[in-house]
Length: 431
Image (tube, rainbow, N blue to C red):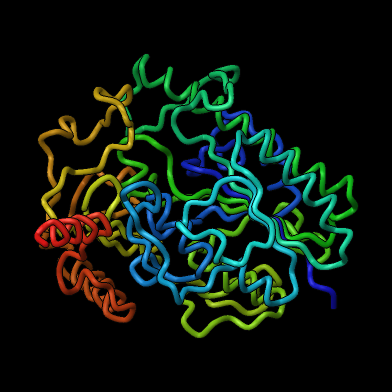
């Protein structure tokens, strides 16, 4: 059978802040329609609440501490995929696909080595959508199946990028873990405006697929790298930091109809699912697992847990977690602040309900939360005698995962590329 086209759309910092995920104040009609026409996952998670590590996992099917991207790729942060890592673009190119990167990628410093045959420039989401549509129109003429990796910068801060305007036309939703005050409402109005721009860009790409007659035989995947760019979300292992949208549509395969799956999915599973669905061998070192059989209505063993991690973002803040349907255990390996604040301003316009004074709150060793009775993850049960057995069971499972995946954190703090580069400069100056 002919292989389908694949269009993988992603954006920064979205979390699940969409109408189809229950946030009724967000204008996202095109993504809502995609969810109605395709399949939506309600319990979808990323492996890292930080841009580069999460994206590196999406495109390798391997955890950040395994693929080499334990922090940001750009500027002096300097993280990159190990030279031996295989990117989805390269795997698909070997399988006969014509491949393109359109817009943002944030998983490597070596984009020309990843397997993209065409690399189109970065720009606003409107510009990226237009370039993607033009590429689809031109590339389909050579007869090969197409893979387009389309990356939008928005709704990353600053929220007015590309001329996005605040949107409170349907009201504003301030999540309950943040203080609902005028400054927060202003920030969320701006954030909703940026999301509306992304939604419009997604709609442009979907319309292009329709116009080109590619709709039925194209696997469309929409996701984000991690949670919202607000305190206690992005850069944290609480659910607002690791919950992401996942919407899939492939009409000719039957991945359609507006179905909603509640099974837990991790974005380490995307690559093996894509390869499994199109009949391409999955590399042996891939750490995710395919959920294609779930979408096909065949036998599928649901995940009993997902794992997530932070090592570096703005600074070294090593954390690991295991999340089940009902509980979460977070292990903190430093005495850093209670959460890393991604607000990128001196006095954040949005502050947390808990802890009330983040500047004076630091990591405990372990955090244990009952997600059924405490979905906001405020009440740490790690030292509760009544929960000792549960804590120990989750701790053993988390440690076993770290050992199975050869997590370098088992042996102490891994040096960052910046650390190594500075040491090299010191050695050179010593003569």
